[in-house]
Image (cartoon, rainbow, N blue to C red):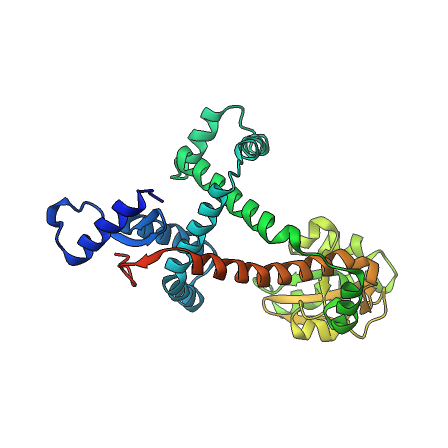
Length: 324
């Protein structure tokens, strides 16, 4: 965000609001926050950036809903971000070394040997190197100010963790898990007689106790053929309902009868089954501690930001900035 002397900034804003500066105004000001301003172009740029991320993850009605939420909350979010950066400046936080180390990690993970290669890689994605560095620096400053003023003051004792485990045990129940193998016969291009003949060949081999995986590798017509029928593992509720009903009563090592699926026929083998169980406390202790910390930090952060907002000079000039 652009900085300006507070007195001059307020002076300009007052006259801009009254329409007295005429042609001297080259940039609409959305809000004044202490010594900083948010301009309309910055607001639009942030909206475009966040919408790009939403479009990469969502579509349809869900995208439309999130777009409306973004429009409603963006200005408040930008003001909050700016207030955090102002607090970081007041405390003289320096993230230069963090930025440097992160850049080195980015280059290493992407097999880039120099800053120039990184610049070219970013440019290919429509991102300027300078904006990339600036965004990284600002994110780190916000994270550091939140930790220094909120996070490090949070203490969680063992009794809270134990109590949470007892009250929320349903959250730590692992569902039944099935590990399956499959033999598949495609229906397309085959007569009923050909399909029945193929089934019979497979049934004879399985009835003769030949290895299911070897039979799948020989006869199956789906992608699982190359892995000797291995389908992988599925938790309760992840399989199609009719398939799950077919395997839930099987003993480990047993095989279903032929099942008619869209486009073909299958026989499934239950290779392994893990029963539903409550995870032990020690397995989930760190997870619970993290959950409690996040909840507590959010509560304390809201109090911290409410105090910052109350002590700051905030003047919103365009309550609903245009985005077009």
